[in-house]
Image 1 (cartoon, rainbow, N blue to C red):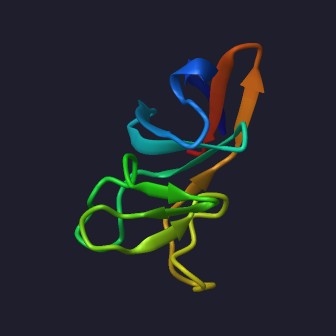
Image 2 (spheres, rainbow, N blue to C red):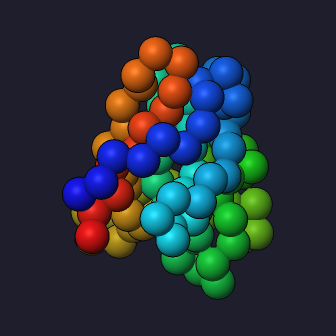
Length: 102
């Protein structure tokens, strides 16, 4: 496991997202009520980017086909089995750090 500095907190305003790349992984960061979450930035349906999708509460809607993911877990809708990877996030000072597994 590796803790990677990916961006400044101010680069993800509340209610917004940001795409980053860390350790070869494409990651979407979401700021929900001043808490940052990180999930894989690729929808299960044809790989569209999840960053920039409509964020409503803890749910992001894929812009390409409308699939909805919980940004806190990466799970697809109410599914307990399907989803994208999620990554632990830490805030250190004004920096966002994401834990990437090997």
